[in-house]
Amino acid sequence: MPDFRSGLFASLQFRLALGFTLALALALVLVSLAIGLVTDRQTQRFERDRDSAQAARVKQLVSEYYGKGQSWEKNKGGLQEILEQAGPVSGSRIQIYDAKDALIADSHAYLPPGGAKLWPQPFSETKKFPVFKDGQQIGAFTITAAYAAGPELAGPAPSRISDRVNGSLVWAGIGAAALGTLLVWLLSRRALAPLQNLGATARRLGRGDLSQRAQTTGPSEIRQLAHSFNIMAAGLEEAERLRRNLTADVAHELRTPLSNIQGYLEAIKDGLIQPTPETIDTIHGQALHLSRLVEDLRLLAQAEAGALQLQLSPASLDDLLQSSVEAVRPRADAKGVTLNLAPQPSLPPVELDATRIAQIIGNLLENAITHTPQGGAITVSAARAGNNAVQITVSDTGHGIPPEHLPHLFDRFYRADPSRARATGGVGLGLTIARRLIEAHNGTIQAQSAPNQGSSFTLTLPITQNPE
Image (cartoon, rainbow, N blue to C red):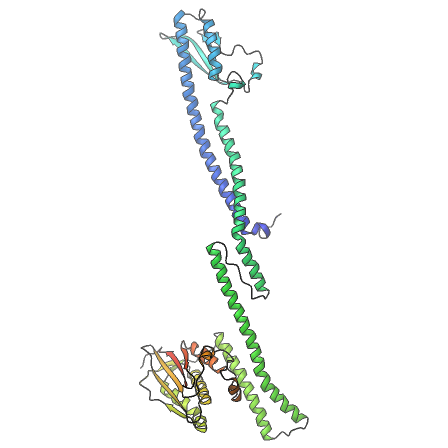
């Protein structure tokens, strides 16, 4: 038994062809029934009108012949000749009887015994009509449906027209259904070819070939589907590229501290160096660097997956900014960089995770100190941005960032100055984490910079709680 859930029977092309065939068959059946019904009614009407007209003509003929001689005997011969001419032409057998029901004339009296075999069909449907003269029945005649007087005049009786029409409709319907099904099969095969191509492309994409793209051909809906598929494939390819880059970057960043730790431990084990406090501090520093990297990766993964849990509560930006600035002031003073906290206007409390926002500001301040030369200045300020947001800005007078690097500042492991970042222990995750954390607060972060004109980073946070 065929499995209708798979193979050809489950294909859209087969279902389209089957649906068209069923719809066409139903339409043909309904049309055939309607035409057959109309044909039957018209045939019956035609037969009634024909029989009535024929009966009227025969009655008139019989009455005239009887009236001329007031008897049947004198005119029997002439009447017989007339019937032999009129009967076959009319397609009926006419028989005339006198008042005593004796046969007077027969249009087909010349038929031999068994003569019905000469005709395609025996006589049938006999109808008898009485004939009256001056109110007295003088005889009667019968009309029997028959074929004409020979094959050259042969033709079907009107009652059989409906049968032939219906038969013709059946064969025409079968032919139309076969031709229509073939056309639908061919047209649907051509129309569905882009979908089959799309399916083959999707299978190759699923096997790992992310460079595959579907052909944007066919009807507009299929072209739109193929275009959407190509956008998805491009996104998958880009995501795979980023994943591979991330794997390579993580492996590279982890390898440096691990190699340092391993090298020191092997040297101590082989007696090349002594486990002095300085050596232990160096190993400990590398372990801390490794721990920070792992923690940054964990935090970034949580933020990108939307699984980062924020501890939101109303917080004063004045206190938050003051504590963040004071936390990095010793490092700024040691480098000779002036650190300023601009006077803050009256700002409402903001619903935020104070620890995470302080982490963002601290990261921006650390970067600013790193990239600001001695004698430079860093300024932290805050202000309202319309009625529904506040902005926090960290600006410096450092070397600035070249324009070609600005679009990539918030990418993972991206460094505008790799050598300097490595010297300070950065791995290129700080700004990426900052962007993810600020987006978790439904805010934004933007950077503006120009070479030798300093840089400015602006955080925008929505105000979700009115001032008390």
